[in-house]
Image (cartoon, rainbow, N blue to C red; front, side, top):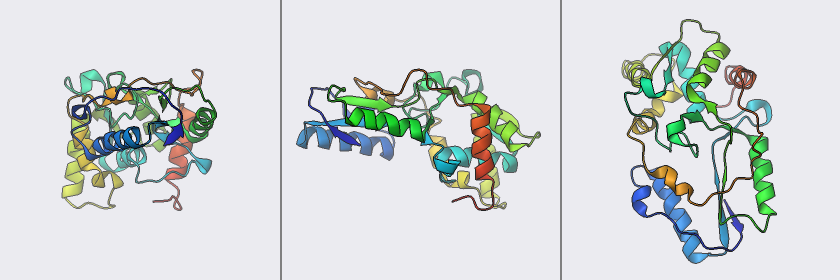
Amino acid sequence: MCLIHPGPHEYPGPLSAIGFGYGESKWAAERIFDTLLPSVSLVRIGQLGGGPGEDWSLTDWFPSLVLSGPHIKCLPDIGEDAVSGKCFSDLFLSLADPLAQRLPILPLKVGAKAVIQLAFDRNSARIAVVDHPNALDFTQSMYHAKSALKCPDIEIVPIQSWIERLKDYTQTGRKPALNASKLLGFFEYTMGEVTKAHKLRGEVASAVPRNTPVISQEDINNWVSVWTQPSARL
């Protein structure tokens, strides 16, 4: 999104975004605004979740990933030791540092408040980032998800193993069909070497309070409880 606020800013070159259409389109959109509307400031919003009733779309990457667990009997570990020197790209981990391997989900109401504050702050930076300042360790989030799913036979496995199990489930036509299967290309792409995409943050500032609580077991319990309801929104 954009806000009106003047100020100089240098953008990284296009090579910093090449590799996936999503990141490329964001780079192109920002350059268009910078060229045609130089008085517009940009707000880079990270992953928002947990809206009213926790009713976010089940086709989003995180619900899709978590809800694959009971069917393929595992959830992914993206810790350094689990990915053989590779880790998820910035695309997957949103605006968090990919080397930190954190879950960047920011509660919707916290993100909305931050954006409103930025909109009325005439001294805000040329580019601002709204992301979680205390993002939960991703692997820990998987253990929270396993507990919330109440499936003790789910393993926490290296990300490559999770992808292979998801591929096998998908290619053999097992039922039910999983939303995660539709995102296989996305998950495989993000298994590449860390890209330079995180440099797109540039000179950033965030209006999110530094004391924003870490996503807890209770938060993930609430999410999973809603996602597994028969009336859950696809």
